[in-house]
Each structure stands twice: as C-alpha cells, then as structure tokens.
Image 1 (cartoon, rainbow, N blue to C red):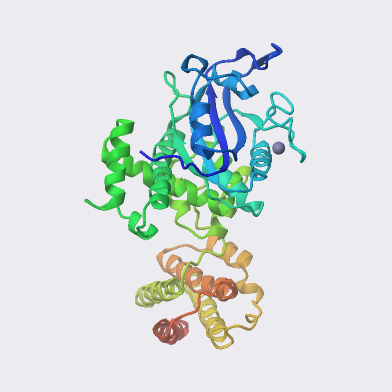
Image 2 (spheres, helix red, strand yellow):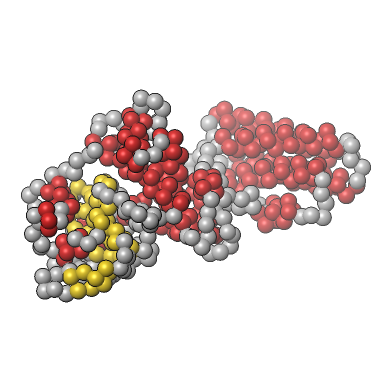
Length: 438
Ligand SMILES: [Zn+2]
C-alpha cells in the first residue's frame, strides 16, 4: 500500500521463528540453535538505492536469486520476516543507537555476541536480539524518546505467522488495531493532509477509507477493526505516558487485565496511569482499573473543578433536605463535622484562587489525603446522609489537593470558569452553614 523511500536510513527487520531451529549462519558453516520467538536485526542503508533497495533485498531468499552476504541472510532463510521498521536519515550512526535500544528492551537476550556488529566502532553487544514476545513499536518509540532520539519509525507489514496464534487474545486485538495506526502514520507521512484530518472514522473520511482497506486485508469486519483501533490507541497512550512498564503491566499472563480496565485507565491523567501501572507491577493491586481510592493528581482541565463543585453542592443540598428526617444524634454529629470540613475546603480553594501562582496554603491535618481517606472509609457511622457528606467532601478537597499541580501544568481557569467556581464556593458555604445550624 505504501512504498519504501529510496533515501538513506536505518532499519530493523522483525523476524518470527516458529520453533527452535539449528541454523548455519556464516560462510564458515558455524551452526547455532536459535530458540523460537521474535528476532530483531538492526542495520543501515546508506548506499545507492537507499532503504528501498536494501529492504527489498532482505525480503528475498536464495531461491529468489539472492547472494549470501551477511549473517542475517542465513537466518532469513529459516525465519518469517514479519515487519520492517525504518527511519529516513543521513546519519547512519543511528543504526547503533537502534541496536542498543532494542538490546535494552525487556526480555531481550543476545543469541550470538557481535552478530551483525563486527564493524561497529562504538560498543554494540550485537545488532541481533531475541525477544520472547512480539515487539511493540510503541515501546520502541518510547525507549527512543527516553534516550532523546527521534521517535519517527515507519512500519511496513510483510507477513503474519500462521497456524497456532503466537499471541494471546488482548494482545491480538492490540496488534490488529496497531496495524491501522501504523498504516495511518505512513498515510500522514505521504499525504499533505493535516494529521488531525486522519482521526475521524466517519464515512468517506480519509481514515475510514484506510480502515476499510486494512479490515479487508486482515479479513475482519469494519466494526471489529474499529474496536481494535480504540483499544490499540488506549494501549499506545499508556505506553507513551508510562513507558515500557505499561506493556508488562497490561499484558502479563500472570496478571491478566480486562479490556475495559485498560480503556478506562487510558482516559485518566498520566499521574494516575503511572500510579496504577506501577502498583500492578509491584503487586499492590491486581487490576490497572482506576479506583476511587487512588488519591493522585487526576485533573486534565479546569472545567473539572467546576463540575466537581457542582456535584458536591448537589450532594450537600440533598443532604440538607434529608437531615430534617434524621434523629440519630451520631449521624447528625458526623454530618455536621463533614459539612465543616467541606466549608474549610472551599475556604482553602478560595485562597488558592486568590494566591494563584504562589504556593498553595498549607493543608491542615484533617484535610490531608490520609485522614480524608480514613474518614470516608470509616464504618463507625453509616447511612445515606453520611454518604452524601463524604462524597461532597471528597469532591471539594480534591480541588485543593490538585491545585498546585494544575497551575504548574498551566491548567488555569478562563474568566467564565473562575466566575462559576466563585459562585459555587458561595453556594456551598451557604448550604454548609445551614447544615451546621442546630
Ligand atoms: Zn553497532
């Protein structure tokens, strides 16, 4: 569907070996048994014909008239060449950066030291590595980015392993969606259309036409591909924000995750994403699904402050009506305490808004994350009214907790939001003082 440019560049060949195979891999007849799995070979094409010629050569076999030249040519005879990753560049030193980046991927091992790296002037352990599972370009890009290298990687799909599927369910769905995402990267590269024009999958849009081609190629229906694209986008967002650890948290067979949990985590803030991903890896919790007990920064725009305050005000309003029917003094006392904490929180939020840009006011112990969490979890006093009060407190105090980080990230309120926030603060104060009135 796309053509490989004739310009110079660096590349990676992605091979799949279906079973352990003994292969003679050089002219001297040296043999080695390669375990089954995935193999990545990094090289560069800086001569005439560039990437186009070199990658066409790597795809051929002896039977197609190829002269054996490199070690990888011998390996290619036995393995399935699945994907080509490449990047156009005049700087062929990138070949070594790419080789070192893949050698550092999780689970990577070196089957034969210095394979493809005999000419390296820099220290490369090998240009050929083994991976137990199919490599992800998203992980590779995130590793390039953490090394300060360009993350432009074009991907061409050559062949898919047949027979028993080498990848389990969710990973399979990711791979399907990823196929579209990689094709879309190439389409954006080769067309003058703005990248934003490639997001909508509505009928007759460019992305839709591309998706229909991919669906046909992969023999799946368009709705199925659409779901896979949604899922793959979520996975790539998580890898982009959390790095390689996201991959192992999402796809470790020992800690299976659900599709729903992955999708919902991808819609939260990067801080919460890292909190859940690391927690799963460290064994603190089994699922990556966001949980209301994650007391982490989770605000993506100031509009959320307005929404949280409106919800809290609604809860307190219902609580006020309900309070008249309650005669249990323990509950009444708890509700009034919660109301005072709500009022204290809006006072602090008010101060935050006034002092914007300077450090937020100090948080009293009663409103720290630990004590609020302990209070809302406490089972000593229960009931609908207490639940409403706790919900409101959480919604209000969260704005104070997140305020400083919001300002640091430039999530400033626009004039209208500021006005709404101030008026919600006033209304909450008013309702709270009615709740506290004996
Ligand atoms: Zn090298």
